[in-house]
Amino acid sequence: MSATPYRTPVVSKVKLETILNMYRRGMRTDNRDLYSPRNLNVQVGVIEKANGSALVKLGNTQVIVGIKLGIGRPFEDTPNEGVLQVNSELVPMASPLFEPGPPDENAVELSRVVDRSLRDPKAVDLGSLVIRPGEKAWVLWIDIYVLDYDGNYFDASMLGVMAALMNTRVPDYEESESGEIIIKKDSPGTPLKLNKRVVLVTTAKIGNYIVVDPNLDEEALAESRLVLAFDEQGTVVGAQKTGSGAYSVDEFYRAVEISRSAAQVYFKLLDSALQKNQGG
Image 1: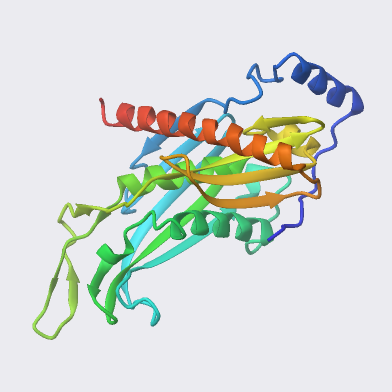
Image 2: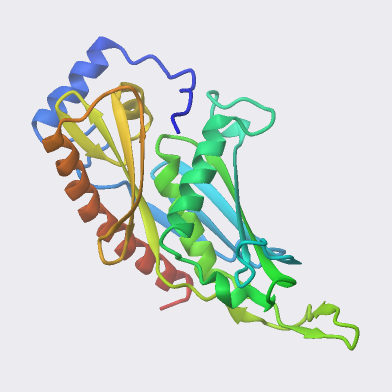
């Protein structure tokens, strides 16, 4: 899927040349090297009424994720699995580039990239969410809200989703004599079962350079972006390209290896942030 770009901000030729000159020295305007993500801050349990939640700040891009569980019916073709639903919203107050109204194709693209990155590698153990095969199962709703946008909501959103999933507890329940499922509202529940963790890494191609976690100016300059999903073993489990620019074979493989290294940085930053939240 290729989404229609937003009204991208105009970057002057002077600013472009300044950025390219910094790239030649291996630096960027926000004092990073070309292959390092921005500073990451993660808080979990930020939404009291949700079953799991997280607030992520990646540089100046901020995303909040809420997870809710409800009783539903499994899909007919997957009677032994729970249901996963991912929705996202680019909140108008996050950026003058975002417009009010129903989710546009850019928000839909974000939802689909996150959904595929969870579903294809079976990151969530959907089998553990079945109550009665073919009849009753937990529906897992993941809602993503981009609150502040300074480039690269893909990585920030996925980090928020993983943190929120790790914070999610499945409610305890009991069955009545008539077969009704009764949720125990005052019960602590059990941790959601995950098979693996996944992160997204976005790189932008600007001239002859490939940079990790592009900020807003870099996104405006990018000929194309490559969003790759990795598990903790460094396996690519999903991919999405946006923009009209092309990659040579060498550029593509270089982007994959750069992204693979950045993925491990994200996993370490995620662990560190969660440990701080737990007081560890």
